[in-house]
Length: 298
Image 1 (cartoon, rainbow, N blue to C red):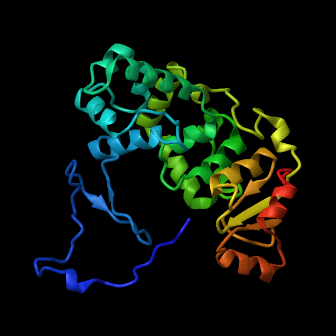
Image 2: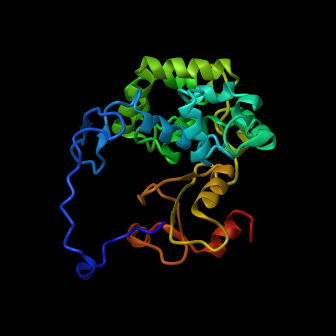
Image 3: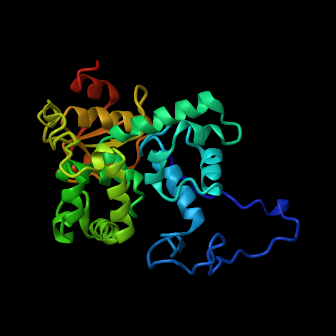
């Protein structure tokens, strides 16, 4: 929640052996060419399908809390699974059993049983978490939530035209293009099919798993239905993610920028320029006490 900046350069700490850094033109993990797209800061390996480093980080991203939230699937376990050839993409996680995991170093029977239970529990995660876990370029938690709310079913989302995707609030043409490209890749469709075969509910055609798309209709019709919020600054009672989850549970939406369509700006400690923008546009600003009263948590 804090944007960093370079304050100064400690030239006195230099030894004289420093050399200017040059970004490699080949991926250090797989040797494939790298590319930096105009307007982007990131330099990316082009071998997304089989780069071992991308596979490793993709599995860790899959297991992260906003993803499929698999407790116990950390770097040490992932490294061993890859080294032993037990996992080639995320769908292989759902074929692991206790004996295979117990054979890993520093795992043991109890830890293996706990990890299998955590993997099994992740089969029931809602669609928004599955979409985030895929690691689709430009699709973070917010975009994943909007896509899930709009479609409610990965089968319908996979077939959606780019123009339809771009028309969803908060998505736009760049994210739409990225989503369309992800679902157009045969290996991604094959992985989704394997996920469905292995019981990942949100990957099954016809599954409806999102608030506002059939899972909990009451949330879409809650007391904040139709209201758009922007959060700025640090709240005392909630993290940013917790406040957003509460707003959405009550039927509201959270966006990143303040516009004339914003209904409320919730301002915590040390708010940023969003607060100034809210005052300029005449948007209602709530401090934390007013926000708590609005959501019934005073």
